[in-house]
Length: 385
Image (cartoon, rainbow, N blue to C red; front, side, top):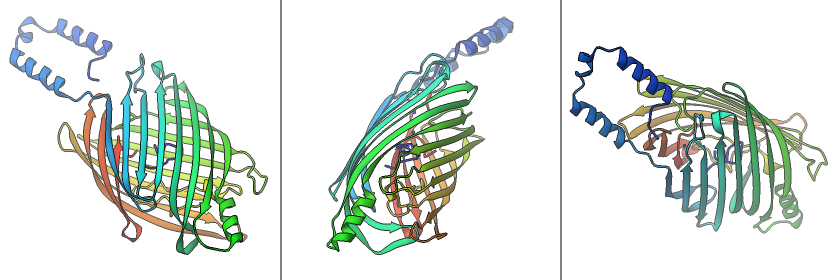
C-alpha cells in the first residue's frame, strides 16, 4: 500500500452497451442497406457475438487479501476492497469507493477509507480520504544524513483529505484541496534523553493545509487508459510549523501519457515533488516508485520518471513490464547551501486480470527490484498510473 501526493496516491486509483448516438447511427446505416445485404448475417453468428459480449466480466465489487512483505513494516496480511458505482448521466467514468487495512508482525496496523465521485456530464469531480496509522518503524535517517544503524520508533497518526474540481472546458479542471494530518512518535531506543526528546519533537506534530489543483485529462479511461494525456498540478500551503513559526509549502506535478500499439499500450509517467520552506521531516516527500523503500528514501524533493509496456495476452489476462528511476534530494537545514541527492533505479513485471470490461477494472500483482537488490510485491486494483 503506497501513499501518493494526495493521501491516497497511495492511493494512489475503476458495464458494455452502445450509446444512444451509436444506436441511431447503426439504425440509419441499416436503413440505407439493400434488403438482400441484411440477410447475409447468419443467425448463429449473431448469437455467437451476443454470447461473447455477455461473457465479458462485469463485476462492480471486489475484495481480496494482501500479503505484506514490507522492509519497513515487516510481514503480515491486509485486505483491499473497491466498489464501482453506476456512472452518472453523461459521465465518462464511474465513481469509486475503497477500503484498505493491514496488520503486520511488527505490531503495525493501518486503515484507510476513500471515495472519488464523478458527477453528471463530468461537470465536477470530488474526492475524500481518511486514515489511521499505528506503525512500528525503523528510522534510517534521510537522504544525505543516513544513520549507521536503524533506530526503532513508533508512529501514531491520522489524516483527513478532501478535494473538489470543476470542469472549465473539455478535459480541463480547476479546483481546491484540503488536508489535516497529525500524530506522535516515540523512540524505542536506549539513548541520551536529549536526543530522544529532539527526535520525538522532530517526528511529531500536526498540520493543516489548503491548496489549488489543475488537471488536464484526455484519457479514454481513468482506471485503465489506452490513449490520452493526463497532467496534474497541485499546491499545498501549510500553516505555521511549531518549530520555526513559519509556513511551508508543497508543489506537485505529474504528467502521464498513453500510446496504443495494436492491443498493447506504451505509457510513461514523470513526477516532481518539492517542499519549499523549512518543512518538518515527517512532511518530507518520498518516491512513488515501485520497488523503492518509502520509509528509507525521504527528502525535500523527489523527481522521477517511469516507462511501462502493457501487453494483452487474452480478453481477461494481460502483463506489464516497467522501469524507472527517482532522484531524491535533501537540503540539509544544519548546513547552509548543503544539498545531498541519491538516485534510486527500479524495474519489474506484473500481471493483470480483468474484473469489469467496460470500466477496464483489473486486479493485478507487480514484482519490482530496486537499489541494493530490494524486492517488493504489490497487489493492486487498476494500473499503477
